[in-house]
Length: 251
Ligand SMILES: [Zn+2]
Ligand SMILES: [Zn+2]
Image (cartoon, rainbow, N blue to C red; front, side):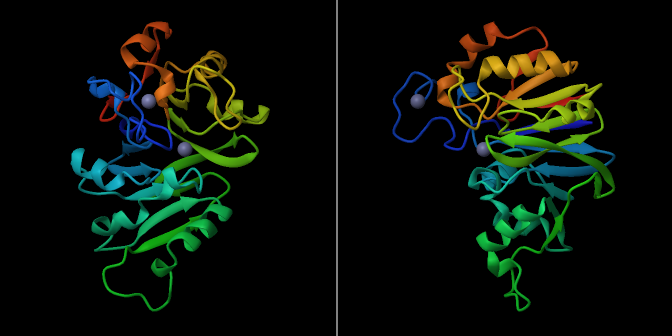
């Protein structure tokens, strides 16, 4: 199985527009973060997790030539803003988009022209699937994990020995059992302080990883307030890493 991090930034991306802080002006490419998304390759299939506003550039810069299914964590713009750019991937046949029902409704509101009965030529051929239990996407078994994004219930996903949890503030107690025996856990860590109402900061993310005990963990959805990656990574335990845009991990 392989995961490629297409983006590892929070909703604004890093650099943030107009910011002159040391992270936003850093020359280190690890400090430049597109909106969070990942491509998972397993059993010959390619599953995209989230499709944010940077998707077009992410697909071009990572040479993505095919996508078999898309898993959406929630309806926020930084996770769905690029769905229209799936056009080149669904010319031959429809592409399945999996999300919970209130999210599929939100997608229809966002890009209604893709779901009308009288479609104009060229629009993306998207097939929405509202899911709530373990399901198969392009023949790959996926287990949804309930994640609380503050008060908003959203989904993370487990695929084999990989779990991808983004925009998490806390996990309901019963979800921990679904996260046992992971090789790779992907988890959000917004910044160094913990004051944000809907996202974990770095230190609660590390506590969370300590409880879930994956073999390795990769942090995503960082803002410029995480600090320079080269400095911040010195604080991480040996099996925890900051993901960066373009990183591929095979396991
Ligand atoms: Zn987000
Ligand atoms: Zn900044």
